Image 1: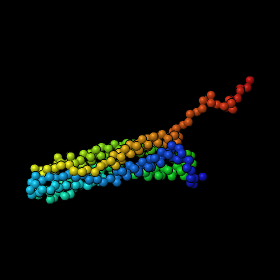
Image 2: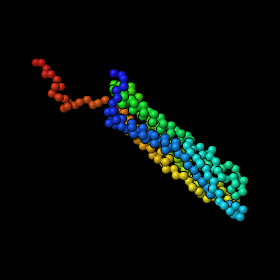
Image 3: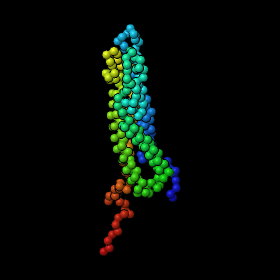
Image 4: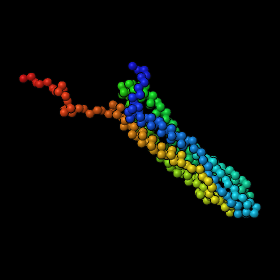
Length: 240
């Protein structure tokens, strides 16, 4: 029969159970990265305290996909009566972040398709020579892509932390008329978690490749040894 045959048995096996974990972990990966928004700030103190006794806080808000060079500090125009140009954060980190999120989304979609195949068409999957081989190839590709994207995103996140660090920003924007002090900085805990989930996905997909490989024709079961042959398998005696 070629129609759908619902069978929850594969979920009890590593082949299906790990696919569920991959599906969940891929959601956490792109959600923790793509849903992030934060801000950084610098406190400006005027040297001419008579004319400008109050401190001024300038703030820059940033979010995914982290094109920081387009982010402008707000509240700087009237600070200390100094003519200011638009102050930007530095760096464009959209390539590693978008690459990472894209891999997460595609992994999420593939896991959904694979689970439909496992739960509804496992009889066709195991009777086919091509489906397990294609599944194995895609699993290996995703394992490699998780390695590349997670490594690139980890490096990109390190650079984002540097570019948005108030202690680093004050070194670039202070003038002779203004004293700069680091302000508040939004935590990047969720972005750190996204990197962790990226490498966990790498481990899951690499490990799952073995179980998918066992479903292919490339993995042949060992032939039984002579000691494992039953009495019914003994060769007939030769005729005299």
